[in-house]
Image 1 (spheres, rainbow, N blue to C red):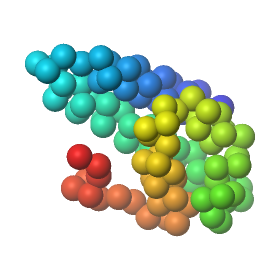
Image 2 (cartoon, rainbow, N blue to C red; image 1 turned 60 degrees about the vertical axis):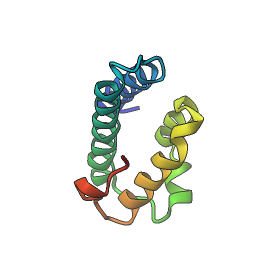
Image 3 (cartoon, one colour; image 1 turned 90 degrees about the vertical axis):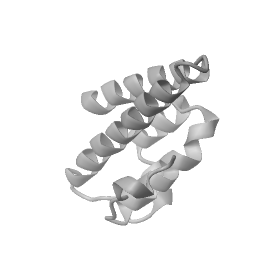
Image 4 (spheres, rainbow, N blue to C red; image 1 turned 120 degrees about the vertical axis):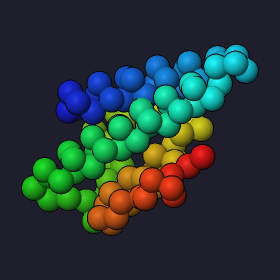
Length: 103
């Protein structure tokens, strides 16, 4: 797996764990950190996809890439749908606007 994606995935998973253990006082800040790290991971994946010689033409093709399989194996179940939604946008060449991101 690409080292920048690996690093971004690690940060995102750490922030997810922190969010899941958050106390009420820290929950908003932890949620914001998680969200930022999730989209940083998505941005790294988007950059990686742009460099592929032959990009997948569907979500099904994309999730079968070894790198995406590795990510999906490590993602908590609660994040799989959001990840696949973002991956589908990447495959389709679309970018989610900031205000359309998950809140």
